[in-house]
Length: 254
Image (cartoon, rainbow, N blue to C red; front, side, top):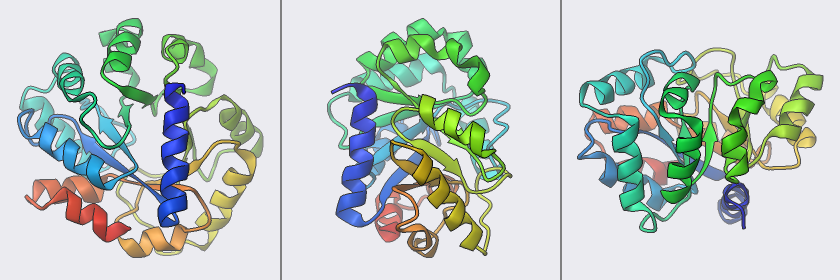
């Protein structure tokens, strides 16, 4: 099984078992590189897939909570090299497959050929690069050649034609952003979001997961049946910052 197929399978298995799959986002190196492995392990125990966020100084799609965790992680000394070493040490011990979520600048600085090799050897199954446009997908060729999932992102303002193109090129799952803002902002009226997610799901041949603004069980329940999974990041990282238990937060969302 290719790495991207492992991601799709984990999403569909989670959906079949719980009605909707749960994808957890964890900022690498937050609140410290020493605490990160235990937090990641806890998230993997209670989520179907875990995104490992690469901290970056200019995370344009991230809201205030995730920006703060990135700043704190960088201040605490998190680097791509340290993160990859940590993931390699944990390979084979985690209960859920991992994705890397990172912006293009630090990934290019690390080197995509090197990233493809190191990520594969560390057991990473795919990548999410929010600022990599469809027109520049050739940049991700080393990652595709390594079999890693390259998650496509769409939003409510994505045209039908572009949605079809992104869904056709994506692997692992399609990341359906539920708003045109940044992460962490929840909209109270979900009715149009449900219709948008159903359109994405009807277009894609791989699972569809909704992200941005998913903060509590009522938000998860509102999207059951409209998509295959939900992605929870800001609420989870705020809990980490408050010293709360990651596993209990994720369990409460099921």
